[in-house]
Length: 328
Image 1 (cartoon, rainbow, N blue to C red):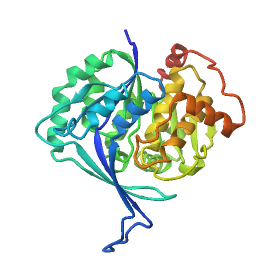
Image 2: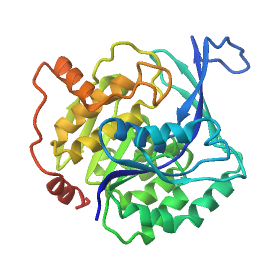
Image 3: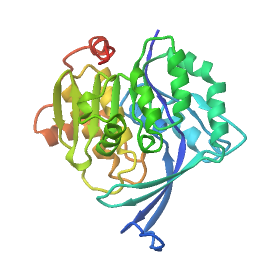
Image 4: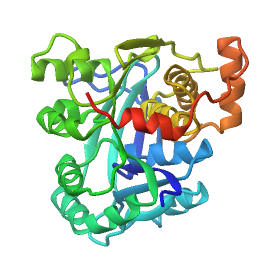
């Protein structure tokens, strides 16, 4: 019986955040204004955001020998994230990302895996664990991670789940691996740059021509997002934050907000608005998990921004799930 909500596949990462006034040019040295290390990784970011919103989340990812020492294990446990799928190893540390961030601009991100091939091996060695855990969940969300494992897992996956997919920057590194996963996908999340790349790879003129996912959500940064569903286009505005500090993780919290809203029985347009509201909190502090909101905070900001009472759910999860499981 599926008693939990969202199992996030992805990564557990230590984010090294560098705030700058401008991005460096080739061979240029610039002053870093602020440095922080925070907890991150797309999979973990989604899991924590879901939990903060009142959902029951879990993570399936490889951690590292410093997972406990650096306090990440404790953080996830305190946030009520199910960490049965956090694969511990004594062989190497957690992955690191180095995020160069400029105010009112996009990030530049570099990733470091000490033993990437061994990380993939550990995922395959624990595929039965992933299958076992997935039986407890309603939605399986796949984010930036190891797509060869995702493909193998989904090919053999026997239980019918709603599959959510956010390929992120892997769209540029491994676009054909992204394309291979689309046939398993019910909900696809991308930003406008990633959507453009997929159109180039598939030689299509519009993302509407994409076959596979029932619903496609394309983030447009400060211009909000568009949602393509059942021949309709929903245009969702970006909710204004109280301040802009760091955009890291805004996409992950957006995905979490959207999925939690669907689970609560909200229609597609309202779920998009809720997701936009959730994302607005993330950019108000340094780090992807630092300022994630509770559901109550989302309700208040939603009402303030959209100038209307927070709506009641209009459907049921079972009805939404049935519709989304029918792919294009």
